Every structure is written in C-alpha cells, then in structure tokens.
Length: 420
Ligand code: ADP
Ligand code: MG
Image 1: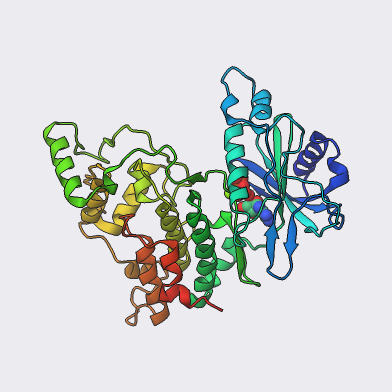
Image 2 (image 1 turned 60 degrees about the vertical axis):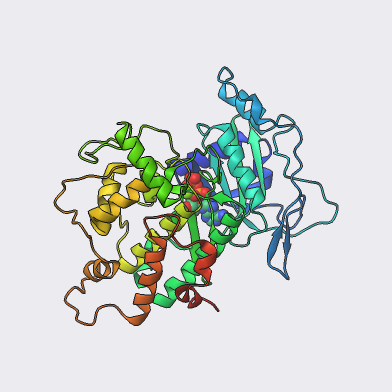
C-alpha cells in the first residue's frame, strides 16, 4: 500500500463516524471514473445486524425489503449546494440509507466486502439510480448485490460482498474456446436477467464483469451508467417498419431536412440528444449514430466486443479516441455499404472517402486470423472457433433489431458449449 493510498484510506475511515468499528480497510482494488473501490474486512461479519441473508442452499442473496419513505428525487434544485442536494435526494433521516433493517437473529454475512466510495462529484440522482437498480437486481446471482449504503454529508459509499476475480489481461490470451464459452455464458446469464428487468447496463466491458477463472464464475458490477429501457426515449426511425422508414427518409430528403452527405468527412449527424454513456471501443453503432430509442441490445454489442477481443487476443481491440474514430473502426470491418445501411436505420447518412474503408469490409474470420498471425494458415479457424465466430456475428450485428438477445444467446450452440 503506497502512501497516497494510505492517505486516502485514512480519509475514508475518518469521513464516516464509526467506520473504524465496522470495517478494516485492506487495500485499494479499483479506481474508475466515478469511484474508488477498496477491499475491507467486515468486522461485524459474524454478528449480523441487517437482513441480507445468504441462503446457503440456493446460494442466493436475500436482501431486506427497500424501506425508504422519506427521500424524494423531486427536490434536486440547482440552487442547493451539493451536500444539501445529496441529503435531499438520498434521504435526511440518517446517515445510513435505509436499506438496513434490524433483525434479532444473528445472520451470516460475508467477511470481506468491497467498499465503493462514490466521488462526490457524481450527481445524487445518479447515485440513487445506481443503488435503486442494484436493489431491483438483488435476486440475480450473476449480479453483485448491494449489502448496504451509507451517506455522510455529500459522501456516499456502497458496500458489496467482495468477489474474488482476476484481471482480464492476465487470462484472456490463454482462454480456449470452451473457456470463452463458459465466460460468456456467465456474462449472458447476468445480461438475460438484467434485460428481463428492463434495465440496460450501458457499460459492459471486462472491468465491469468480475471473473474468477478458477471457479469459472463471474458477476456483473457497476450500474453507475445503467438505465431503464425507455428512459428519455424519443421515437427513432430504427423502430419503424422498413417501408415506413424508407418513405420517411425520402420525404426528409426532399424537404432538405434529411441526412446530409459528408460524414465523417464532416460531422453532419443530427444534433439531437441521445444517451452516449459508455466506454469508448465498446459503444454500439446505434449509440454512435445517436439513436434516440436505444435498447438492451447495446449491451449485446459490447459483450460481442469482449468476445472479439478474446478471439483476436488483442486488448483493447478498438482504440478510438472519439465517436468519429469509433465509426471509422467499425466501418473498416463492416465496409462502407453495410455501415451506410446501419446509419440510415437511425436517419444518419454515413459517407466517407477514407481509402482503408472498403465497400464490403472483412469477415470476422479473416480479422481473427490476421490478429493471431495465422493469415498464411491454410487450415483457417478451428471448428470450435468457427462456432464462436458465428455467435460473434450474431452479437455484433449492426442492426440492433436483428442482433441476438441475451435469452436467445443462451440457446446458441456456442454458449451451450459452456454448460456444465
Ligand atoms: P467504477 O464506476 O468506478 O468503474 P466499479 O463498480 O466498476 O466502479 O468498480 C471498480 C473496480 O473495483 C472494478 O473493476 C473491480 O476491480 C473492483 N470491484 C468493484 N466491485 C467489486 C466487488 N464486489 N468485489 C471485488 N472487486 C470489486
Ligand atoms: Mg467500472
């Protein structure tokens, strides 16, 4: 533990009254855009004072019912200072968000926890959103549950069971195709549950899916950017019948309000607002095309990017600095023609004169052979790899409506390979 981390840990321990009696900080395990995460020992772990039960038989977490009566998201006002807003949004009553409930029976709880210290610069509504979505997903084994959350002035910490995992970069190059199938089956099991609840994770990437290659189990974390499907949604052409879409595009073109030529020679995407939250390199094409009616399928694309990374043994696979570059990278693979069609789905014109973007692009098979230095190999991909590539193509379909869903994915022969 270096001295800076030591200092941060001291600060955290002092920022909550009684913190030292509850947790012993061990080390820093993660640092993201929105939080720092520490591993800690729960000092009262065998003396249970809240109602998170670990049902041994079903290996399932049972949380307390959400008992919060006095918070309101309506009160967020620009004029209040941040601490005040936090208090109003996240509850006045006590420093502990009321996820906790007194129980007479002592219960077991995990000895090690992950303490997620959410940066005070995150908006209170955002923090509340994350906590609420986690609460909604509490019954899913493949989603890391929220044990409790505390607030002290404008500082919020979330307490999660600690999940042992290995850094993706340490194992992804060594994975066999059956290993990939098991990994992705675990990820898609989590996604099928999250999507069934109508929630879009929005930030699927290796650091948000904690995986233990030894036990071959994984959990999904980080719902900081997640949202319910249909939030801030405006109709997008991609949800129309293809005939309706064509006539609308034609009408817009005639009226001169339609998509213009020139992109990405010059950015002429509609200046509409669309949720672009996520991580560069993992954003689905419809996010880049500013689709205003995004669905859970954006997570499937990102999961596909993870598979492409593993198959090609290159991380990060996409390395764009911005959305325009990201589109060029995708267009290089898929080719101009398919990229143009993908843009039109959302009322965007994709035009480019970049010479490396061909009309038809390249197959995933060729890309994987190249990136694993097997381009001369006459045999090409193995039978297993071909099955993985077939699945990959279903995940990385430019058209979200044709892209495979998480539930369908679990029945795909490739993921069936990952069944015990
Ligand atoms: P951020 O919003 O800052 O990305 P995350 O929730 O993704 O926060 O957590 C950041 C990192 O902390 C993760 O990539 C992971 O390494 C570690 N981490 C988060 N939750 C846990 C957990 N329950 N168990 C173990 N490590 C965790
Ligand atoms: Mg994260």
